[in-house]
Image (cartoon, rainbow, N blue to C red; front, side, top):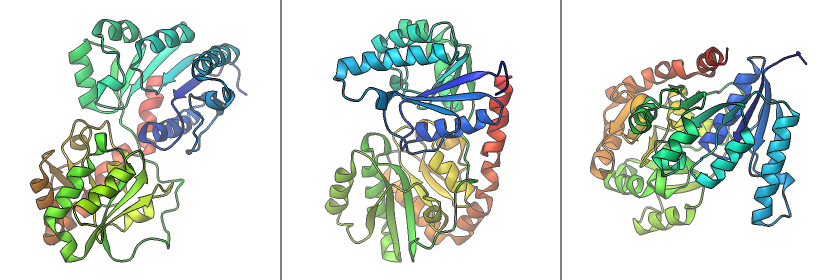
Length: 360
């Protein structure tokens, strides 16, 4: 090991299935390539994505304790680990809206350098309700890294922070086998991500799909993922009598073969941060239809250039966009031609340079 090497801890809720978790995985590889000693620390025992460096799984080390003592045990282990490993920089990737917990966590972090990542435009997930305490916790933080310009702008306006910067989430297809014989035959559009109605708004997606009637032209809708609202989605499909045209599929570590053969992918979220599903779809040359939610899509999609950006919560407009991509072959082919090149600036290589520049 190189002496005096920078030691960085990436602290996340888990390395399970989700956008922030996938980001943590990719960040570990980015920093590892910068010749930094990486320590991944996860609060819950949930690992799905690979990582570079060492791992401290607080969840597995606190099994068998009741709720209160489990939290105490995790705090003690975290404090001990940061001290023993002589961690220099902490990159906190967790939701951070519980004031009592965050005050204790700040005490555990001590005087180490702190960077906080904000993944969502729903700031209630990352900041306590009190503006005073939010400023207390974040004002002296070395960096607050936002995954979109919209998030950074809102932080500056709401809290008057000066320690913010935007670094977009990267895509990385290098470790994934794209070709796969297990893809569907026929014509389909695809959603891939978390099954969470409060965020992803499947009601809007399914209503618009029903209105569009593109299933009468032979197109199906596949929903791939997992989450708390699978039953809700399946009930909604039955309610709209779309059983023959919409199918839910389990989470897949490698959704890219399905993405690559889709007509287009779709996103109908109420709010986002910087949705990787859009970026990954475009990187594979597949156009996207997305609602213009807060935040992310309008910083990725150029309307009628690499996809279609639609007014949010408007099922008729969304249905019209679906039909445009099916019926207007010139528009669709133009967006498809531009898709991959439109996100080259978001490749892992490009985003790695930004991280390297703020590290050194």
